[in-house]
Image (cartoon, rainbow, N blue to C red; front, top):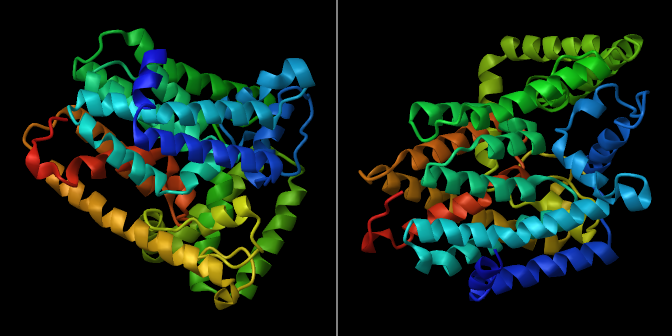
Length: 414
């Protein structure tokens, strides 16, 4: 492991990456920015020590996957409470190992000479560094997606890695199919490893049923769909006043349910389904638009939070402040233009890379499995297409683009 670190960090791209990661961690230490998501993860961790519900929203304690809150307990022996410093430490370590695994993948593909190019593509995505410092599990998820990619290339069992990804972010539940599919491909005969993610998933469902009377892995599917997907749909087909009035009346009804998690979860799912079935084409449009939007959103919100910019309205339909978008500061406009343009260029390069790889007759199952997993991820995201959702996949995207920018000189055997 030490030798791998030395080999990786002897290269220019890795050194620049390390310096950028170190800078943002120091910045966050002295100029702390707090995300709403962070408090939810910590509340989830705290709820495990409590016999009563400690959060304001009845379902908020089950919104998040358990592994990231569990990491916050690393400082428990010292502080007697879960905390953010253990999260920051783990994220920084994960960030340091991302170039190492990228290098390993490129060596396996016999494209080690593209390492600096891939790293500079990764460095050009500033969220890579914001979320090395800000407390979210996405940078750790990125590391394990790279490990998953490496395992697929090596035809090794992915069961444990899939379990970790599901434990970090519930959206990765669809990856449960990967270790089973590997069995059919005869990549792995060890059924025990392949069953680990299912045992983990089932254990979490059992825990939530026992503690919250809700047999579900996460409430994210009901709460996010109700408050974001459905609301964005209704705002497209009705006035703001109508939608606000509807949600106010429904909120009063939800309060009357006296915190019954199962009843509230069922109510939210029913209302979301009812709205989507009433406007299926409109919903399909905003869903696919959000999935595509993820690829070139400039991450203005993330920069605003990290650098403590004055609060201003959102970009590409996400409004979190003053609706007069033209009133934002000039430096913010410059940031948006630069990174929206970079996002657009890299999206085009990614599509070109995909077409080049499709023409390659030597592609193995690793390409198909990781590519289909990425497309499934995009399609599951839905209407709220923000740049941060692309972060777990950004190293894989950088590898794909880096491999194909001068791919005519050499056949890619993936």
